Length: 403
Ligand code: CS2
Ligand code: MG
Image (cartoon, rainbow, N blue to C red; front, side, top):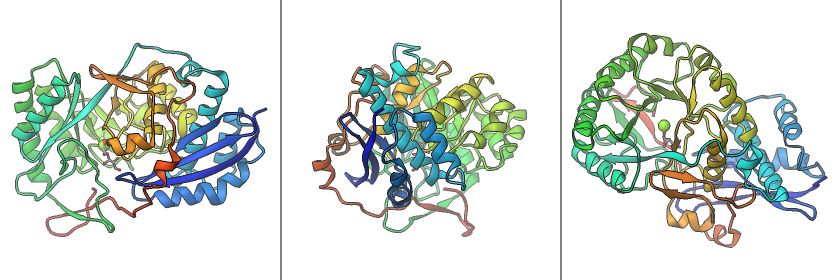
């Protein structure tokens, strides 16, 4: 019995907000869990502090599955990003504790390594196709074997995925939501040109990915998928909003371009039809938003039965605690596909010292017991919470669209 003695939520903002749960056991290790939900951070912080932590005190930290079931079934109001991010934070912290108690890195508790390293993809972006390709050449020179390409759309002032900074990308950019403008017609013209130029300059020995970010209709996504087929993308991500999982049937009928979806999913139920009908090729659900290691393993096992591989979300608004947990999961899961790796800033890394490392286009979680990440609370306290929203997106005529 490893009794949970106390738990608390630490909110810090080293350039962007992160919510971290710290669970302390009586005479035993402490564990960390990421609870960051971009733009709604305080909702998860309150869910944990006001509703979850009181139920944890006195429980056995070793009983990860029972606590997961208690928090999922016991809430009555199931699922949703806030609830599942809170459950994920508890789950990550308990796995961290179990690894530390065993003196083993988490991946060893998940069945050991199924591979030597975890292939990751970086984010090349620019306002023009030329700038984007220049960034991509830099990523290839840094050893990346997979690169996501996002470029500006001529005629639009800004667009998703093109950062103001050369490398770091943070979309939660204002105290109230920034309003952006979208044109599908303009967008559908530029992406095939981007990929043609990329294959011309980068060749075929690098995987190229693209994120549509939920903005097309199924037939528009089918059009883009067909237009990109000659350039063999590794995947087309979030081609359409996936509320209606069946809409992917229409895309699948028209194109062989591999499809990835799921970074906004928070449970297996969000992906059930997509996976069992093999409407997608990669499931993007992540540790922090899909109920933690415990639930993500279920999603991956279900995906494995249907030739679907993992492609976990890994943007900078998922903290280094999630990146560490994801890498342990990625190293072990049999149907691993790829891991997104948007580098955190040095300021963030200083708050969250960690064992994971990047080398030659891949990462490894390291051999530290548990997750292999710590929280420097003294540094965290220097960065108070600063409200920030993700943008909203409207069509040129003002109609609300998807960001
Ligand atoms: C994006 C994310 O990395 C991705 O694939 O979809 O950057 C997403 O925009 C952010 O995580 C939203 O907070
Ligand atoms: Mg995405």
